[in-house]
Image (cartoon, rainbow, N blue to C red):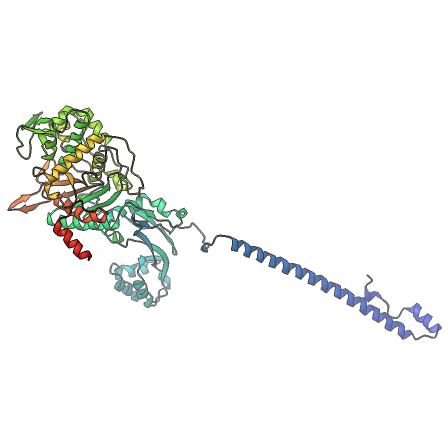
Length: 599
């Protein structure tokens, strides 16, 4: 297109031609000016139309992109928005821990940390005084010294309550700042403290902090609990919170009444191996976990888990294993008479009975009346090698594969030279040490029909199908003997007889070792290993008291029959209904009272 600005308005040739013809030359100028304006108008219109087309294409592309994004969002799964952060990310989430009924044992609480920018403090002296007044564990002089150290950042408290946050806010100091985070909360306080263990802050940033387990379940399952792939799914334990609380309450009362230094209890399902309750006293509140002892006896610390870490001689409770092996190997039957005349001497060592049971007892009565001599005679028949193999099959010679890091410390102790004398003393629980949890698992194997059971803190839906250790017939015979220990007057645990519940069990009273060598003359570890109901055992309960002592009719009693047995009986009386067990027999007056109450 010709540039309109190049069109001559008064071309000379046309002007001369117009003058010769007598026409007006100005008309030619006006015509050329009109053509120039029309061409310029057409060029501007074309440029405007091109710009509108480009703008329309841009708007169409933008609306198309928005529509595609909205369609994608509408068809995707909803999720929480995530904030982008620089540097290494801190996994601050941690899954809840719940009991077998879904009740919360450990959870997270949104809170704040308190930190300071000392260079931004308006009045450091007033800030230090105010913080010391709010937090009892902070010292004013120490705070003031830290504020003046030249540091531009300092932590004051890892976590604070909302009330404390408001009090700090009221101080009006711009240099005191809050960082959001989650802290571990145990809503039931000290209940199941040794099982849960506790947690602390690990890596910390201003706006986040990781929570790591330091003991118990929290440490054992630390990685799983911090795994974001769980999507908030809680860790379910085999514990029953209600049963655990009842066991701890009864155990604390028994520990006080029996003047014991410590106490522990394990309640487990004889078929699935589930630990329904595990208690150790003295205990602690995992919300304010105390510091471990740096010197002295670790068992004196409330952090010490007696049921899992405490390796003790468990006394006559081991007699059940000796009788079971003798029966299983066909060496005797329950009616076989055993020489119990004493003392029994071996390698300069004397074995005596607590009472004189006469010259002979049946195998059944050796267990029921708890004869050391009779049990040692059975061990002589068995021999060292077979005895060691049998106890090894029961898991009594190695640390348990149990879901607590403390269980690795509970490694049984036994003589390196397992000779004839050791065989005899081990047969009645002396010269060999194991944890209370070992004993509970072994008793479960003895009474559940003879299949090996491993204790576990994880929920199980089916019975364990472990190795067969003894036959069903032997297991039935052992149940009858354990029942007789409680039911018969000659038994050592008749204080465990509970109306409505058939209880069987075996007592064990072992002299407590002296750290300086030998044994104390007046201190014992008293244990009662019980099963209920004895005709078809569903649960095993082991109660142990450390240095119990009670005065009865002017005499000091320390043996398990007077100390651990009544405590265990009260535990069963309390927890059996909680476990859904109805009394097998009901006293007529009680039945009338229950009937009247229901009306």
